[in-house]
Length: 119
Image (tube, rainbow, N blue to C red; front, side):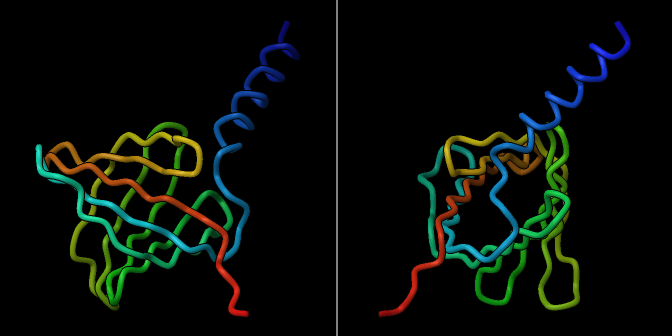
């Protein structure tokens, strides 16, 4: 019985991590919408790190994301200065990571794709 429970927990942990891309650099499309406004989208550079961490760079702003079982820790950096931070619920929809900052009524969506190579 105990082995079965441990196996089920291991399987659940694997399923949760299954949607996180392999470590590496990716192209991203980052969309932000506030309240009922339409989403504002733009390109982003995405570095997927070990331990389910992602750095999302938009110009000189970096979103440091740490994915836990159902929540994401978000730290927003400008250079070495932290300018915001929050914890929110997240989910994967295909290759799109979606998460919310409920206090600010803000919805985020990060679409991740392999880096395009120059020809």
